[in-house]
Image 1 (tube, rainbow, N blue to C red):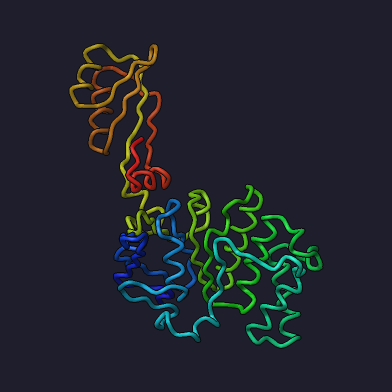
Image 2 (cartoon, one colour):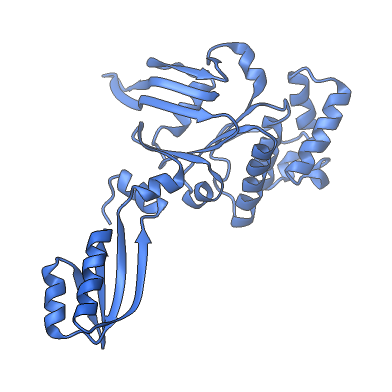
Length: 308
């Protein structure tokens, strides 16, 4: 089942006296499957938050269509099955953690008994049981972020949408949030979260979409994206004659002398095989042969159009 689906989704903002057009989301075709963790990756200003606001019905598209949980995203009833954490949440700081969650439980119509049970479960989930009676003004950034996730889950949603849930957190805080997202998946929920922190995506996501200037430039499973990237192999060899080195260079391979060793860089299996055959045929001795594949970070940088 497609939990989120968009077709040709576009959002254009107009600014200034001359009403200059600023495209924030451009012809977005997105699919998020049931019970997967989908990472929405992109630099600041790529259009991630705008996309999330469109899916949540907080703003309306210029054109295109969207469905959430198999229904038109504009249907109010589906909000009961969605949990949402905005990028920069603001919570009334004089409430305690427990009072805050109780308030949101009331908004969803939970009974007093249901609220008490759910609050205890969520505080355990996000590691804030000890801070239940502490006012939010005394919470750290990481604690506020975890409490925000708890409020997004108070209604036990089928779909959880988080906008930059690990932004501004230290490594320990990021790990705690990652663990929560993985637990949600284990419970059968679908998680859609935006971020610009690549390691978090690599660790927990089933699939990832890369957004740049409002356009989806790459989407798929991480290993599939990496597999389609360029690959090269580093070959270290010794005992190769000058004639052998010249023949390697004629194959258009990168050859670098490192003392009594030679480092050869070959792209593609065919070039690697040619290099190995030539080295063996010229009496060289292979010391190492190390294949390399493009990382998600390198793919991300390439899709951003950054030269490196």
